[in-house]
Length: 66
Image 1 (cartoon, one colour):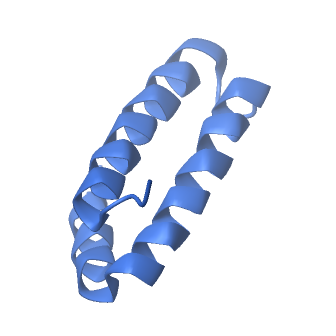
Image 2: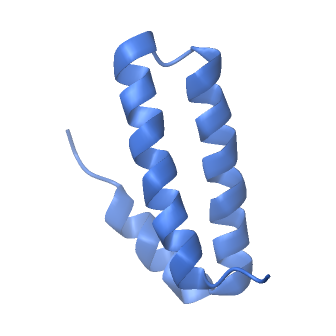
């Protein structure tokens, strides 16, 4: 089954939330956080292959000044 750009964007957001929750609980260098980060990178790379304009929009929307 081939994943669509929309499905991949949803998965990216799910992984981002899991990664941030794990980082809040265990710290940024915990293996679980790194695992989610690697999965997030893979899905982002897949999104770039599926739909480059959507990847650019998703990237710009994910950066927030804290």
